[in-house]
Amino acid sequence: MKNYQIHKLFPTPVFHFRVENYQELNTELENYILGLRKKDEKGQKKSNAGGWHSHNFDLTNDNMAKKFAKIFEKFYKNVIINEMGWKYDSNRVDIEGMWSIINKKGSFNIQHNHPNSYLSSAYYVRHPEKSGSIKFFDPREQKSIRSPKIKNYGELSAATVEITPKEGDLLIFPSYLYHAVAENLSEENRIIISFNVDIKYK
Image (cartoon, rainbow, N blue to C red; front, side, top):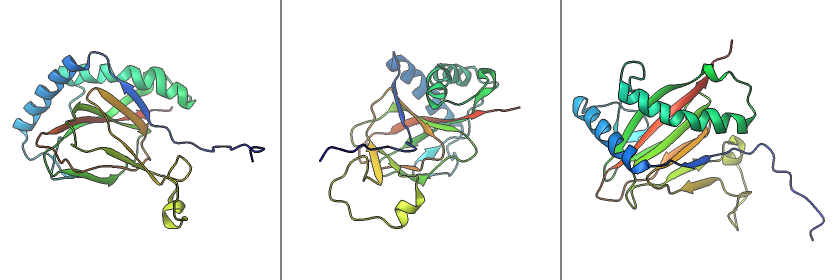
């Protein structure tokens, strides 16, 4: 029976970009991040379980951090905010926090979201095979409380979706979207950069 239509209401997007010339960028980023870890081996504890989580990059005084922020800026200013249909002043849209996470073998990130911002991201500097996919969770809380058993997984039935990124991939998504990172089962480090985007309104 085909005499019906489906209205897919209130979709939650995950924008998936491929950064040009990422190899050169990733070499710079990896050296920068490893330098930060050398200066601050303890890092901080957030969603990381066993991995190293940097403090926020100094986007005001650190020229390298400012350079990386400028590279990512075009994606959320020129594409995403327009796609979302949000009203904004491009001069009042800023990265309000940028940091790095290094997950060694056995490390992972627990389920979390990023409150007090509009967009969040993950950029993949190093992502060896089996180093951990990113999992997104249905943001409709009631569905996680009680829902039918699933026979066929699809976009209407799935409660979670996993994406296995490649080096040079940039994922940007609404900050309210809960996500987690699977355990790194490889012998190599998984290195990512994350940032949050805020819009200042008068």
